[in-house]
Image (cartoon, rainbow, N blue to C red; front, top):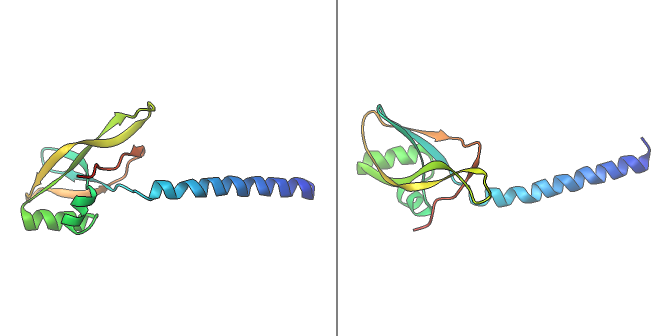
Length: 122
């Protein structure tokens, strides 16, 4: 491989890497953390809106668990899979639900393999 070809290939790879890197922050600017709430009878996927995060005091399982224990209930967004306007599957807010404290309630992080739509602001 000649130096010119090698330089062009390197320039192409760097340019491609820059495009990928430049587009990554826009995805990370508004991350929506999903959680799975598991009970004896059911399990649902939830997320917190910005207002919910302020109320709870954080966006992690510990903050959610402590808020449910302290208040006895917590209102959050239930998420479900739907088709987006572009035809692709996405995790999106379905409805507001109230979680009631129970000994058999478990909250754990949930990782979506599809696009996640942020929770609406109230």
